[in-house]
Length: 177
Image (cartoon, rainbow, N blue to C red; front, side):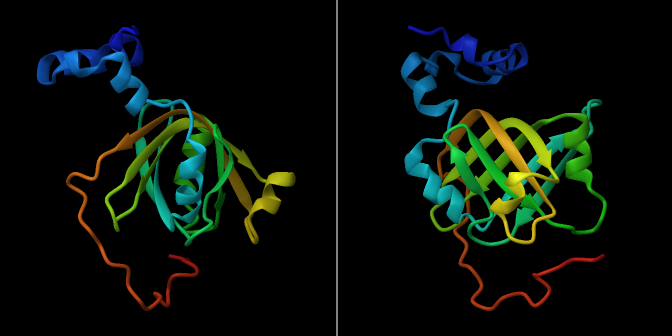
């Protein structure tokens, strides 16, 4: 049997001891809720996601969380342990990309508001501004690949059910603010 503490860093363990129930983390729960890949049966769902949230930070720990949208096929699964998404010019701040250049560790959050399913994906990002990965996405000037290190599925609790708008936002295509 795997010791639950091997799956968490020191401060996560401390928080679990102070406010949680660390005894629930047996081997079966760890295997059910802490993965090192995205199972093939979820690839279609990830690729159909119209958006996700990307968390980055620089080496000093200064964080940024960005909404990444573009409709279905925004993300491509390149295998169980790697995915890719395009980077399109937005407000020209390049906050996410700048952080990735400084610290490649990232977190992605996928939420399906139709049924509340959530998937957290943590890993290491690489920015590609030339080479074969650019062919993955039409019109992409850059592609970001993520080497997946940890995947955490979450239950649907506390996620509101949202109904998609039927009319497209006329400002949806480009942002030059």
